[in-house]
Image (cartoon, rainbow, N blue to C red; front, side):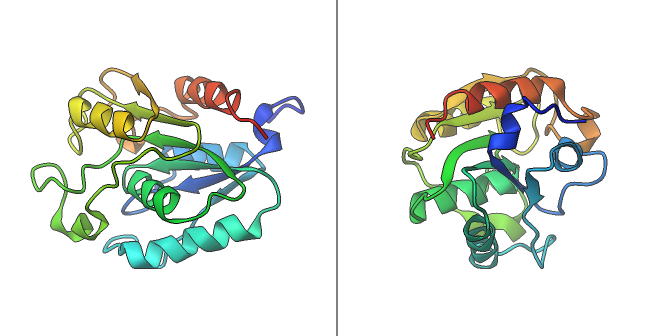
Length: 190
């Protein structure tokens, strides 16, 4: 149960799953259930995603809220957040928590079906941002994830060997992620 003094209650948490959506055992699903202020941004097509379809859904989610918002992206949801932040006025979006970015430019790491999310913008995102990556993620090398973070002017956290930081990683509510999110929320000026 979320405490009254929980800092997440001051923000709308916009959960951005990656390709295939985040299953019931994914930390994003746990966060969606744990925080009343969390909203999962749903897409019509999860398995053959199109950036041109996903961006308007995020536009809609941002427009519907009333409080400052934080984008919480995983995998392809990171690419969505980065494209959104580099092409839209930020408005009420005050921060981004980006976990396990998929290297959508690399045929060695990601399937062709998501290549339409390339190229990945390489510019400062303009809001406090934290990138979290694993040393044994098959969708991005740790070096590439750190390179992305640098180009986005984001904080970077190497969490060790957690795979793609997804359901397979068996993180549950993911306490370490919650600590990192709390640190990011503390950097937001509203």
